[in-house]
Length: 118
Image 1 (tube, helix red, strand yellow):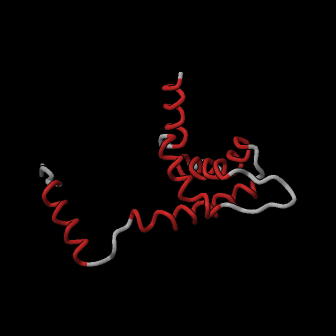
Image 2 (cartoon, rainbow, N blue to C red):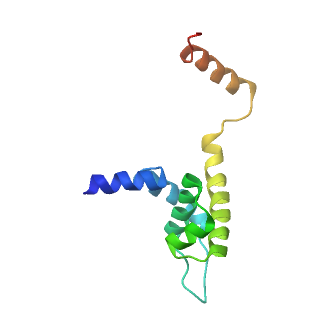
């Protein structure tokens, strides 16, 4: 049963739950917001909404129905969470833009990336 749920989780969010937890830990401080009037939408739900939007291309209306959150709130959540993901991951994903880094990548590609010409 757990394996089946994991398959569904990966299919729905396009990442295993362990990776989701790592990403949540990275972006959570950025997307945390203080509310004084009403209960906030959890960080976890906000990240789930954003990942589902990015993974599936579902409409805001569809996500609103699936997560039971107003469509204008969904738009704000997606925008804020995407910015947080970018700010947290950009230095981990992208190398410094210098000649030496690109030379190393090109050499590795040339070594491993030989394509057969038909």
